[in-house]
Length: 298
Image (tube, rainbow, N blue to C red; front, top):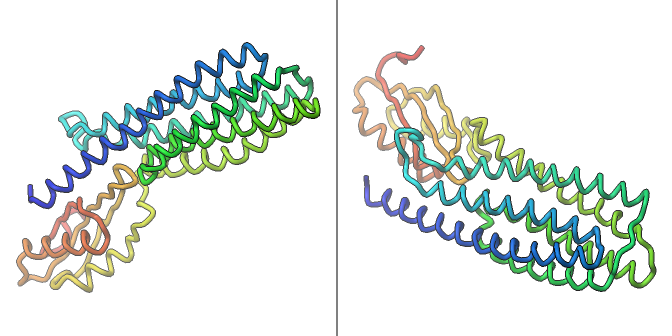
């Protein structure tokens, strides 16, 4: 293993531990507040707060799952998972996206029921708990935002954004009921939140399923790579069987076959190809097969 490669491996490890710590802290904070919200919701007879506590429970589960996935992904590879445990992060993101959709359905059903028969609530206790909830979520959001370049942390962040919107809606609803007695404010605001959450959930599910289906990473252009290798690496006549996929959004992988001119030393060509892939395309994990004659796989 080169010094450069071991350095990047150590950097990945340290970064993974940072992400894990951020998500872990947010998890503890959200769980603690969830207990406060359940008690507050029962005392104030506020369906908004109880609904938001259910929402918090889902988010706490999502954060716990994200934390565990980040922890697992720091393990090395073994005979069972030769690429290591990085994909657990993608799986966590995918499941988080699905739970967000489940939560959206639940909020819609709840809102429709409340539009049909508005429930009585104690606005002031509900307002107090909702304000604390908003502050707690802002703290969790600021922590998680430090790691927003990681897809797993980003999926946890979307859950917290949903919570912030929920707390904001609960504040507005409690104030509206307190000042005007108009009980429809709460379910109507819940439906606005659903639209915002829906967009985030769709993005999480779309991006993570693309990775799970071995799709070509978003910022990798196979045509561009093929052209670059054929024009910039002396001796490369043709590039075929070019495949790119990703372990996680941050870890692209690539395999290819290259047909090389007869007089060229194959080892030098491989080194040159790898250098172009790393320096120009940011792909530092590639498997290259080079041959002088026709491709043996055809």
